[in-house]
Image (cartoon, rainbow, N blue to C red; front, side, top):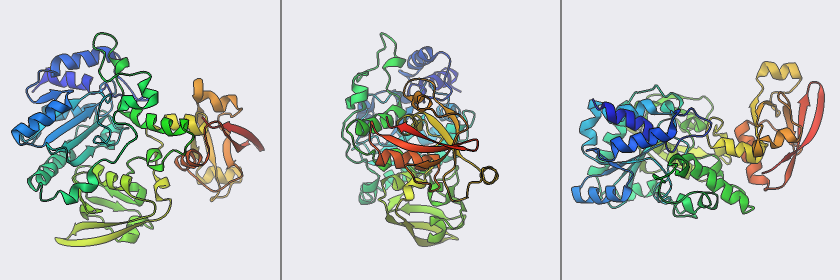
Length: 441
């Protein structure tokens, strides 16, 4: 339907690209091609949020802001469909639509979302009130995934929230972003030294672009350099519903497909088929909205969920125990690579399965993390330089042998050990136990 726009969109959307992810071959050409095709598009305001808010106020419409990383191939299928699918057009026509391809100057107090995704959408009122968020790990994992039913449901949900505004303003309070140490990404020290507010269209534009994932990485580096523990919400951002034992349908706003036996969600009484209407008092329009509530939850916490079940309204109480957030699996997040450098010296580790534990004589409740890979350059090579080898099995850290996943170990080290310190790590190498000094970076 829009062949040039689609191709350009696929290119444009990569500028916040994810490190360690597949990227287009000609990143510079992709970004420039996108600008040429999109900057005068009839629907999309290109890379100008302020204009978007002004247009939304003038038109009396809600504002839709897509943040898309152009040099990254993740979510390409979804993005192309958002640009061309006829079924979405009547819904998109009810919004003022903005497309952002870089995170350099976004207002960090307003734009708080899953920075590790290469396609995200935020829905606003013209006065700046946030209605909800959309992001998909299904599409992030599969560039060919093109299903837009979940996106359509989020659009419909945002429009419903808009129709209820400002009467529902109180219920939306928890959706708003919180205070941040810096107003924009380029004010964070590690980014301020390399990037400006504007893209360098007269030079290498890709090198001038702050990628979305760099925002999260820069915040973690900021706390690290100050000698402070990295906040747990920066280590485990936007926890997935699976963290508490819920699986949610990707083609719905927030509908339960499965409940893990013995989980926090099971204890709360969730059932497959439950349609989540609100969580913690916030109306949900997507799975990302569910993750946002968890992201802002305390530790421990109690959240009330209102669900529709068999045509009836049911209230469930979700009790999150102390340490619940550490159960979040961050192993596949692009932002975790920099945390592997900070806490693990560039090691990538995975738990031994039951058979491998038995073969090595390791109990089921003890630490057993197999070194499946390690960095070879810079900070990612610190563990290699310290003497670690591929296929070492980590069995103790500072004497602690409690079972932990890679995600849990990273969090433990980032919250208890400071930059410049070392951790005593015992590894099983063959039949020998070797203790090494792992530098904290």
